[in-house]
Length: 370
Ligand SMILES: *Cc1c(COP(=O)(O)O)cnc(C)c1O
Image (cartoon, rainbow, N blue to C red; front, side):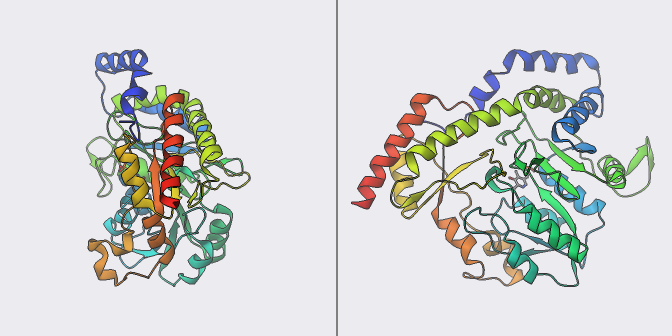
């Protein structure tokens, strides 16, 4: 089977360095909030060109901490997309606020700014765009809406480490950007990890305190916080992968170019679309297919892993029944959930695998199109 992602191959590539880094942490006697975490925060700040960066326990906590730091909670509304991983909306609900879903753009699958304007109320406090699959949302339009209406922008950049929007790194454009280092993310580690970046000094201070039980001085607590730090082992591993992230993202882009060249002209299928000055890092490579489920079955039979992202938009999830949406509420998100299919994408898909993947898809589409 050609896998969708290949963590084993990815971690084998850094094995010697990783084992050395693990030994360094092991021997340091400091496992939480130590040198590695601080060094990683410095290095990631440089890489993203962000004034502040705070390592946290995971991407979901990054979002929760961001909302909490801005004092968003009970009675507040946060606009986001229904076409994302559940954690985006979960974080909004977790702090007691209400996720206000707005449909997506048909070509980028990201939050639609025009529909966002129509969803504003006097309870709206923030907009939370997601850079889905590694492709940045329309930040110019979103930042303008936020400015005109005095709203915060919290970017869910959990799938987009290193992608750029008009020269700026995704996650550094709004007030706060949130990242996940879950093993399968394009910058992943061997466990859970997350990051918050911000341009505001007060947000930096507040999140540093909140992630550590609302404390800045040991055993003295200013508020009810969380236990959510990036541990030293993960930070040490992430420093290695951060040093290679441009190369890893570049590999993904080269594979994406090959896929596009061979797939884009097939009838009944389209490849991901990109716009000038907005860079995709292909956390996932999702093609859009008229007969998605038939292609999926054929690929599986041929030994090529594939996956549906996401089969059920968030407004139709059982947990959000109380919000009162029904089938048809967000037609674009619902349509994409029936048409998108992820095919193998990670930095080390071999040339042979790439060739087999495009040949198999061409053959299967030929059969489907009759
Ligand atoms: C992965 C992901 C998250 C959550 O990150 P975790 O580290 O798994 O908590 C949030 N939002 C999006 C869009 C994600 O893909």
